[in-house]
Amino acid sequence: MEQAAVSLVVAGGEAIEIPPEARERLVARLQEPFAPSREHLLEALSDPGRAAPVELDDRGKADLVETLTFWVEEVGRDALPPGLGELRDALLDDLDARGYWNR
Image (cartoon, rainbow, N blue to C red; front, side):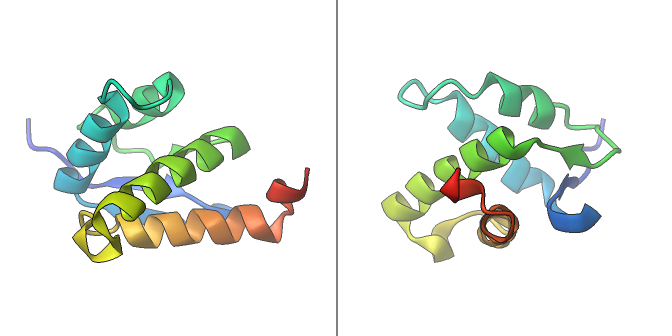
C-alpha cells in the first residue's frame, strides 16, 4: 500500500500536511524508549493509509509540541523532517491563542 501524507488539524479546522517520511520518523520518535507515553499520539498517527485528517485534543497537541520541541533542541529545527517545524509552530500558535499554557 502506498503511504499517503497525513494531515493534522490545528486551529479553526486548518490542517497541516506532513509527508509520509515525516510521519514515519515522527512515529519512530514517539516509540523511542526514553519518550514519555504517547500511546494516544501513536494511535492517531500510525495508520499509513489514513485519509481523514488527524484531530487531536489539547492534551494531544501539547504532547506533540513537547515531543517536537525536544527533537528541535537535539537536532535543530532545520534538521527536522519536512513539515514538522511548521506543524509545531501551528500547534503552539493554536494553544497560545486559546490560553492553554495559562491553565
